[in-house]
Image (cartoon, helix red, strand yellow):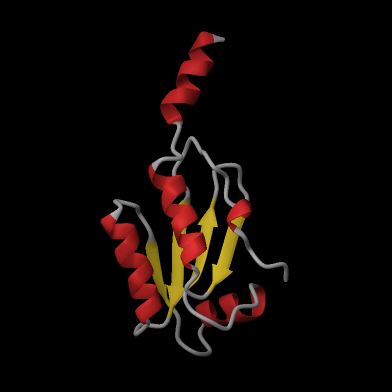
Length: 114
């Protein structure tokens, strides 16, 4: 699996991405990520993972991660970006995209000017 980098996230978007955080019920790094999103007004969903359940199989077997949290970002163009572990670089890039990268007004103005 190729490592995910900040360059995998776009700099701007018209629609806020759908963010899902997978991790065990007691996960300090999952809690840190969710608190960051909450502080910044970013909507994210936490899905609990227990060893052997369908969510655990999904993040370990399908996606190939062994560390939590596993963050999955669904972008407006249908592309999905994901990573495992507490990646401050990726969280920072995602927060930037969701706070300053939303350019809906710019795209609407361009569309009406055409």
